[in-house]
Amino acid sequence: MTNQQNESLNFDCAQESPDARVDDVELACFLRNLATLYKSPLTGNPALSNALGELASWVAKRSSVTKKPSKSVGNKSKLIPSLDLSQLKNLDAKSIEDFLLDETRTKLELIELAFVRFSIPRSRLNRTKTSAVRETIKAALLHEGSIKIISQEAAKDGGNRNS
Image 1 (cartoon, rainbow, N blue to C red):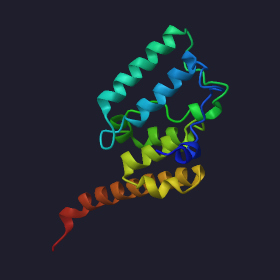
Image 2: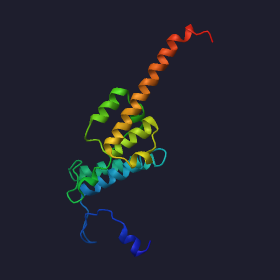
Image 3: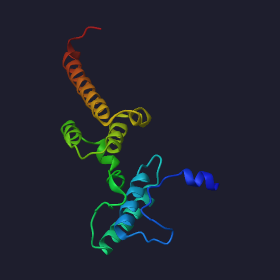
Image 4: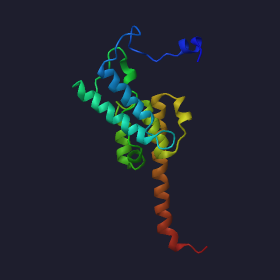
């Protein structure tokens, strides 16, 4: 990577100089976020994600501070709390509604829910506002409910068919 390319990257580093140290809180937040990125079984490395999560917990305990975002990093440190994709996939309608009503949920968490539970492409949702992502999930949930009702009614009336 050339110096020009390297200078164009912005990692929101909290260090003021190359000799500055990263404190434990910043390191723990970074490791948690990195673990979340590797969590997906399709595109990531779940074993590495688990190891990074354990390391983040150890670093946080070492500093006796739990999940405090760094002041210098701001809200960037709250990218995605650890989401269990298998749990998201198996959420019932009420749990999904509660998930949507939780205003602390980030856009990335909502996109993961939409992708895992309803197979809505991430790329489509990345380009929309958070409120639109919530509405898309609500529409998918309503559609799923409609399909269930239609299936139930078809099963009831299936015995009356002559064709």
